[in-house]
Length: 185
Image (cartoon, rainbow, N blue to C red; front, side, top):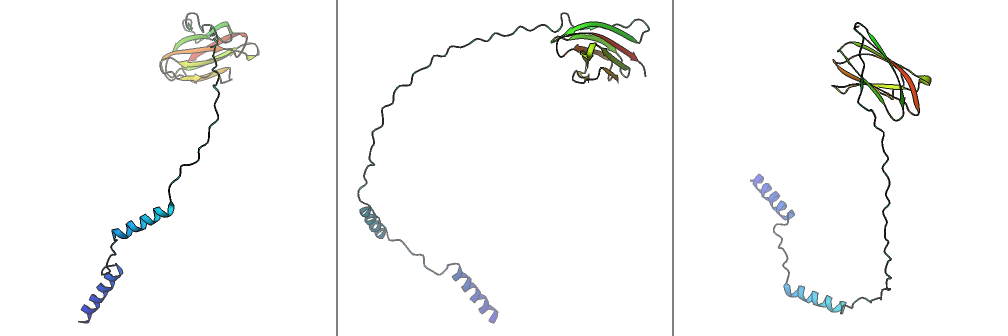
């Protein structure tokens, strides 16, 4: 019997703690109306804010813009008829070409070589003014960039394809000799 009384006591206390058993107050609409009317009377009539006269604005003068025309510079073509093909003599492992290059033009040479062949390219010019880049035509793979200051490049070729060697100078003109050697390692 004691456990039941204890259980009922705990449930009664929980109900009181949760607010059960306490009546909820009801609002009387007449009391709310009376309070609202008294508040509005205390505030009094609403007055309009004072007005100020704004200064008269003067018209802004309009500007007429005259467009200026900047002439487009004429560019010199990079090559007159495309790259010059380097042909090796029958049984030869090297070829040499000489020419003069003038900034901003480049002179391009093209040659065919096989995958895993070793290619050596060397350029000789007064004051090392001329430099070169090498690019695989089919795969677009750069083997040497013009920014690389080395004047000799040696490497195994990644594929059987044409390779373009571009010769350039940073300013002015320079005579150069280009030596290309291709061997089987």
